[in-house]
Image (cartoon, rainbow over all chains, first blue to last red; front, side, top):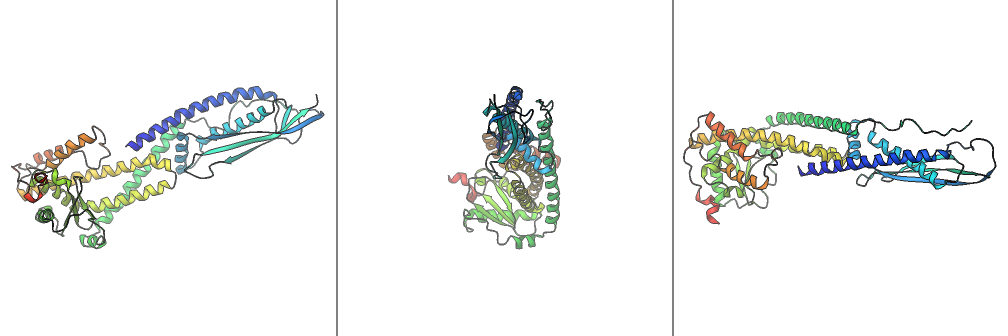
Length: 148
Length: 278
């Protein structure tokens, strides 16, 4: 009985705090994405637009490590039995990807564009069940600076 | 090709379903599934138990390591007296195979029907009964368990519970935490039914042996006082012994329905009277 009460407390804490954190994060992501629209970014290997002289280029990267809340972890555990979309992980990964790209853009505010964007994901926990489950998303690309 | 920066209108990478709804559906589904598994396995156990004769049971559990280090010597006068009481009650309880009583030194007040034809009496029991009839009722209750083969059913269900729990632990520890109470609940619910049946038979054994059922509720009255000390209002659904109050009511109801007499009780045999000694 006590076990169930503790579990219920943990899961509701996880739910409410996780939800709040997610809501705030999405709000910040949407705002910053709008702001960084001025820095064109693509996965193409070639510079976009008219041919201009390039002053210099550099490697830009940004990453984010994100962990899941207790509620979502239990939900994903339940999904383990039935199979199907693990929806509780979707927002987590989505947030990590977008945040990593934003951080990459923020790392080179004066660049004219970023090309060759790549995303990499790695699991920090690597199947160790007793530890906290978290993933890292790394975004990297080539920041191009044209001659003025 | 011209580059036109734009933000996506919809986020197609995430689902917009209600996570709480998903959680409730999934956990309800798995709970139902588990209850189904317990029910079916329980049914199989009942089938198997019906095929195990007392002789076969004795052979299977001959090497079981009871009564353990806390048992009192078999020559102890208390144990001898308890053994003679059980032997005397056996005929009325409808048990033909021999039963062995072991007295265990423990503060807990309880008696257990153990596979292999053994009744374990925990010492604390003797402090919680005031008369021979009260003690006889508890022993007759265990005889009832033997007659219904509840000790084997209980053991079988315990094994199933452990096996299923181990299976779930392999899938994810958080989920096990969620489901463990379900298993405990279904086990407790089953035990309560069996306890009530054993109570009913113990009442009949008592009426057959003493000619009346005085003292039947004595032990539960003592337990009720303790229950209220430990768990005020709580733990109803998770206790394997239905709360004392309910069992007392049940016994009173049965006594009335079957028109059983309630007469004066006999004093507890001197060798068994622990309270006097302390």
